[in-house]
Image 1 (cartoon, helix red, strand yellow):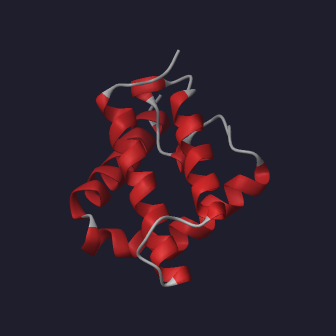
Image 2 (cartoon, rainbow, N blue to C red):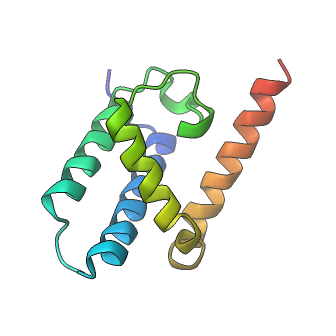
Length: 112
């Protein structure tokens, strides 16, 4: 069942923005993503579409299920390391929502 709620749509926008920032920083280009970056983008979108938690999903770092293959998980970590802080300046609302999602879900999981 594809997840099409507002939480998943926002998560998709956040991941796409991070991949785009990574692409621009690493490749110095402002046009379409390279094949590797596009493959990562498509993979992340497909994982979000298939998330069993749907609208109740946590951030990737707090998730109990690691649905990314190990190699793709490492690629996403690299993207987040490169683009994470830049998100604050380039996409402040998405960055803040991501931080709030991460903190809120982590607190909820720890309190049960």
